Image 1: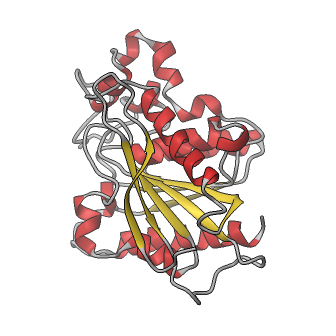
Image 2: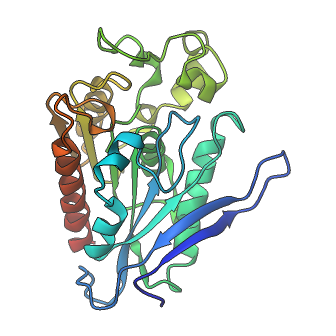
Length: 285
C-alpha cells in the first residue's frame, strides 16, 4: 500500500457514450505510522460527494465558503486514520436523476473493489457529503445493497424530502425547491409538484427502512438554501424506523457553515462532530 499520498484523477467509471466524460476520484491515503482504529491493520474509508446544487462543484471542494476557512477536511480525516475517496458525479446539465445516484454507488463500488490494494477494510466504508453531496450520501446509505452498501452516513445540510422542501424554506430563503427552474427541478427534470413520483424517487426520505445504517445529520438553523427541516424530517423518520441517527443543529449557521461574524466556528464544530462520528463507527465494526 502506498501511504501518505494523494492519488488524483483516478477513473472509477468510464464515459457512457452519451457525451458524458469518465468519472474521476481523488484518493487521500494516511501517512505511515498514523494511528488508525483498525485492529487488523486495515483502514476505514470515507467516500465523499461534493455539493453545488447538482449543477456545479468539484470533488476537491466543500463549497467556496467552507474552502475559505482553510480547514482541510480530507487531511483531518486521513490524520485520524481514514482513507478518503472524493468522487465526481454527473451534474444535472449532463444527466438527470438517477444518474447521480448511479455514479455515487459506482464510486463506493470502486473503493470496495480496490479495498485490498489500498489496505481498506471493506466492512468499514462510509459515505459523507455536503448539500447535494449529502443528498447523494444519504441515498447511497438508504438504497445501496449488497457490495455497494456503506456502513454509516454523515450528511451536511442535505436535501432529503424534495416534495416538502419548498414549503419548509425560511422566509429569507435565497432559493426554494418549488421555484421555477430550481436546482431540484433541474435534477429531477420536471416540476416537482406535478411529478410526485419522480420527486419522491429522488428523495432520501422515501427509502428509510429499519436496516438503514447509522446516520449523522448536521444542519444550520439559518440555512437559506436547504431548510434545516430537511434534516429534522429525515432524522425523525429514521428514528421512527428504529435506525441509529444523530441530529446536530448549529444555531444561526447558514449554508456552508456561514455565520454573521464570518468565523469558522460552525464549520469547525461540524467537522469535529463528523470525525467523532466516523471514529465511533470505525471502533465498532
